Length: 511
Image 1 (cartoon, helix red, strand yellow):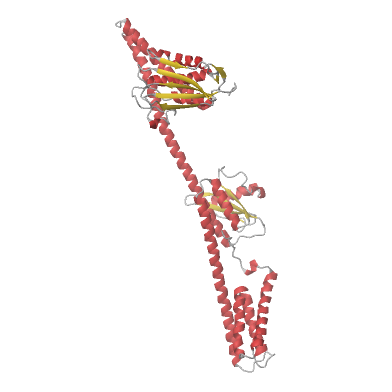
Image 2 (cartoon, one colour):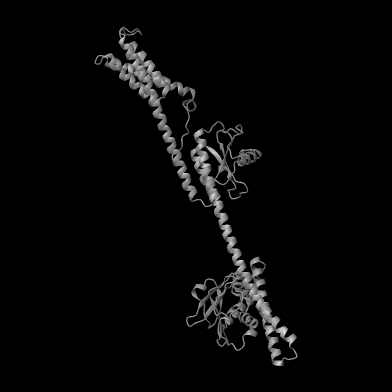
């Protein structure tokens, strides 16, 4: 990006010595024109030599400015009169017609110097506007792709420092997303920084150096205003305390501040929109979860209450078989309710990080036997087929937690497979892992659900009579991953599901 050159007057831009040098250079041009005229005077009439001096006026106006051009016009008239108008070497004019030539030359020289200076000023103004437009476009391009306040600050700071030699800071109330080392308060009194920043926020007007408010301070404070509010304050401190911001520079910085303000507002509104969407999604999910959990918890309670009420109200009319069935129903529903509440508590402990995994060497055969014991009352006539190689090594694991995880996998297999179908349990060593698989001959898992069955509260919706909160597999996944292991599910080619957990063989350590 081209560096923006501040518009300054000749007086501001040039020191005194340079200014005198331009006037001396214009006199040198007149002297050169006189020498050149002396060389060609024999071939041209004196009045034609005026064009040489006119050329000097034009060159002075273009390269030296209006003042030197006027000086060259005046000295050119005097030099032409002294050296080339009879009587020569005097300022006396013998022919009065030359007076008209002098007046015309002087008037034309002054007009040319004025017009040339105006054209040059307009050209410089056009160049400044082009540089400003390029700077604004470059900043706008970088702000368009910025997706956080830190990136916006970096882009704004970079472009301002490319344009001006100054330190840059942004004051945004209640914002902590800027780089820790971005502040320039180290070179500005903290109380001054806070006071002026808050004043600019409240009054929406510039303050500090170069403004009408608090001009004695070293830094310049510009409000970052959008159509809705004042987002923050852009703070600039020149590296050279003697530097003064021109009106054009202030206007450009105000445009920078405005663009950055709209970018910050866009980021803030986008973040608020994301938070609102997240909150709405969370509330919607919470409502669905509460409804699901309430239904799953209420169902066994209703069954228990119904069985106990029947026993209480019609005890005398019930035969022993019916009474026993009611008691069994109440017990089964109580066990079911206990499992549901236990799963909820276990998931809460997992998410809170309250479960401590203690690894100790364990025998896989004992592990599987204990897991089967957890669901033994629901096995009925199920055929459980266990395949464990005799040379399977001991595995470091938390026995109680892995038994709970395997119990959930067996419970899932029992619920999603026909009562007459077998359940298979396989264990094997592959490399540095011991894998344990639970296989059934049930309905399988739809391909779209395979990636989600280990999510909390996620349930495959078939068969419809299957009940539960959808926490069993999520808990098993949490326990296995807490051991540093893996868990996954696949469909069996001949129908059914296989869920596998893989545990690492390693040293005996507490996690």
